[in-house]
Amino acid sequence: MLKNDGSILVHSDGGSYKPLNWMSPPCSHTDLELTDDQVAAGIVEAWQVTQKKTADQLVVSIFEVFHDYAQDLGIDPGLVKDGVEAHLQELLAEQIDLVGDGHTLVRREYMTAIGPVDILARDASGTAIAIEIKRRGEIDGVEQLTRYLELMNRDPLLAPVTGVFAAQEIKPQARTLAEDRGIRCLVLDYDAMRGMEDKNTLF
Image (cartoon, rainbow, N blue to C red; front, side, top):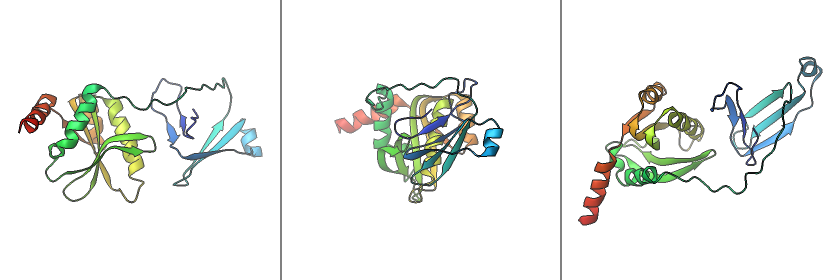
């Protein structure tokens, strides 16, 4: 899948929603001239996608074209968050100490090449922390944060970046995957956080 922003995603045909490989924008795309060995191997087309900032390269070899289709999806409306999820982000930014003592907020909606991570913070030692917030924490949220961390850790001004997966409820499978990848899980009590907000408003 090639997107207008220059990114490319290579998916399997087994129904997986996560790409097997990808290159995030900004990218340049070049059609390669096939070698005799490539032609003999049955390759009919080859693309080289280069990440402009890192110079990383992804070469895609195409053996057969079953269907070639382009669709203009119109103007990007941007990310629209669930009301509770958006409020959780706002509350956690205001109550960043819930993540840990001595933590400080850097900014909300920290933009990466593949989208914004909900909160960027720093711990007491100054280490960067990427926080992804969900109402219900499932495996796809862990995968999303994993992709953010992979990109952010390529930035020498941020690295090393650790991850926190925060949600009102975290599914056991998601917690297992997160912990296996070194991502800390944080269960949020929405009502308690709102209560703190109300108390601050009153006083």
